[in-house]
View 1 (cartoon, rainbow over the protein chains, first blue to last red):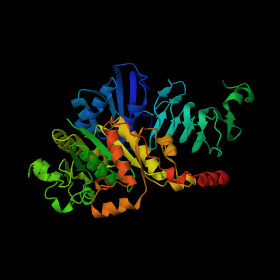
View 2 (cartoon, chains in turn purple, yellow):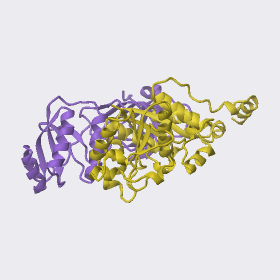
View 3 (cartoon, one colour):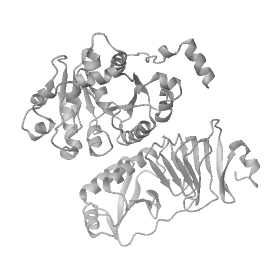
View 4 (cartoon, one colour):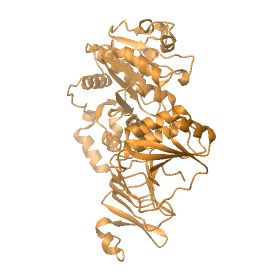
Length: 225
Length: 265
């Protein structure tokens, strides 16, 4: 699984650069991430950039700090396994932590990620908590959350709630026309339908089931709401 | 300072270059000066569609290398003196130029022209990034096909990530008859997914193919064909005029047609 991009860290935020992406792909992803997500962090929050084994030179750091500055974020610390990256980061004036990348911590109690723009084809949003989207997920778009997913709009792409394996998570949408729904380890397709109303997807037994939103509180024992 | 508009699509073969050529011509006919920039290095076509191939001497690369002045590389159209083409190099590939250099060229052009239209190559790789780097606005061309719309949706996301917020949609190659019979995505279907304002609709027409082969853009004809009208309407909308959309359904919206659709439902 791709590492999470931005999450609360020991002091401020941790920005993890997924190791499997090349730099230009990563640039796109970061730009898209900051374009789509509303600032849930405090202004001037210190950022620790977790680079793993990635080699980043002075030019890379210049681009990254410029991008983060626009979001009112300041790079303070760099975590890296590569010597070249450590040198370049120190030259740029960041404090450097060398050593193996700590595994990303994730829990559903993290702050929810609020998005207020359509998630278009080719965009993949990952968040260690719950994701709330005001807008559509278009075909080819993807939302992955360790918590719940709420879509105040049409869900036509892929949604994965409880991505760390938690099958108690829910996916809610005003119009459930997803290419695929995933909760925990389960996968389902939405039935072809022409009439759309708000629906909730949850796991019962070993299958994902859909309920009309207005019945959901009544039909599920104990009502999750 | 002129407006810099990139014409892009994601998918290939949906009509970016045709649109660029026709919009450029239509805008100059309205009294504007227009520079067309071909950003498709290595696969340039814009000069062909304009019928200017045999007049290309220098390209954007020679300008950047300082081998010639910008004025020398610009090919002026004899039919429309307000129109100039800055050709791409044919013997190189997309990496022959950087986004910064594209920006530099486009800025030079905006000093002299009211519009700078950039013809973007297909794909979302370096050629695309070069083409959108200088742009302030974008015209997104798509056809009513699921693959073209999907790619266009991806491109909208990328344009927005690069800070281009003013994006308008051109739905090209519509076949009203097929839409009526429910065999083709309608404009409403396309717009529902892309959710960006519509700049215009262009019907599918064989005259478009003829005009591209001849190197004479449709909007040059004295007696405008339907696609010719569609392109000049888009140009007028770019100028801020309120022009109603073409009613492409009109020829098929007869009583018999409606009855047939009603019973086929």
